[in-house]
Length: 314
Image (cartoon, rainbow, N blue to C red):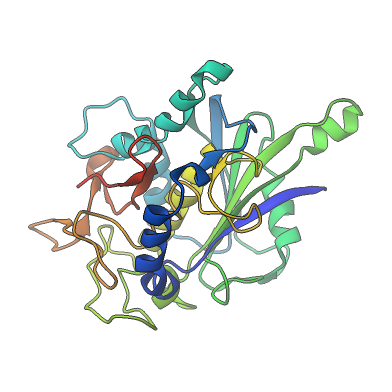
């Protein structure tokens, strides 16, 4: 399987807390056009999101992620602010290149595959992650690999919390004609390995300004942290799926739609403080988006290419 490219989402807490202010200054002081479109395709049309579960996940944990995916394009009347409203912010990237015949993106929940017995072992290379991603449908799809809290992945906790990229579809290779690529995402459950790095603000950070951790909206620090990272990577996948879409900086380590706004979840955010979030009066959990079936989630700010600033739901 030929790898096209891969982009990491670095630590959501320590790294981001230390770099929040400097990243904001970079976006403000540099030529705004540096966050630009690089003439490559964005994901368009109806795209299926398939979930590949690797390791042991409880049904309740799987429901947290699957409900989040369903919430992205839900037509149900949800309380505001909603997950679907958050996702609508990515449409601005498509509008900017409308003259280039780019259509909008519609995400639909696809299939789920479970590998509870960890067929490739409990220490994975990125090549093995891509192999797992290839198990999902590859036509018009984003295949999301989710690894459990006892599975080690190359670079996990030491340099990244998740990755998105693309690989050549094996089905098109067999046809021997014009090859196509499918997008994949990997996110790990950091609960027992590095929650201070990949599940902030639901866990005390290892470095940087210290503040009490927030209560996770689904009462699962690991899975609520995974939602944050998955949301960031989905936004990056939609707007820069093959490494030549929207981003700022070097192509090998770009700032994308969500990673350009590190550590920001609501207005008033600063290093060590996620922002003025909504708080559930019953559970005390912090959140900024409502989902299907009464779900609540914490989602990252997205870079708004029209205002050239980070935009939050609250």
